[in-house]
Image 1 (spheres, helix red, strand yellow):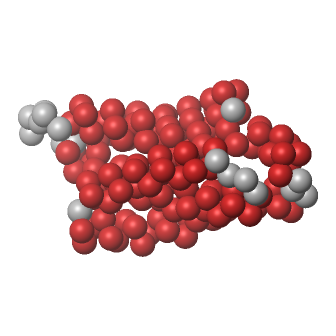
Image 2: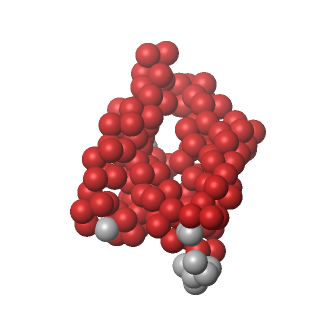
Length: 153
């Protein structure tokens, strides 16, 4: 199978999205003490700021993967990126701890839309002989996001 025009853009977009979702998880952990002071949150509420994102992403990963199979991976991926960006901007404008936790959960939900479809899109445009390489690049982006997040956060 020859390389199609879709492979490089799909690899770049999928890799950036694979970096972004774990980056947001690990970058926020550094800011938790500051968020606690800003919003007057106790330790349990602060744990919900971090946990709500991961919990929502885990809950919605399989349902959005199934919806992507039914309605199209590209459509769900684009909705996910759009919602993730929208909720990220709203998080900056949070004026309470409760609002922050709810928006983090919504951001996690949209992250599931991205993470659940990005790799599927990548696999669908890559020939079987090159899948190992592109999946390795994608997984490396995940761990790079986890590693760089605390430093840049």
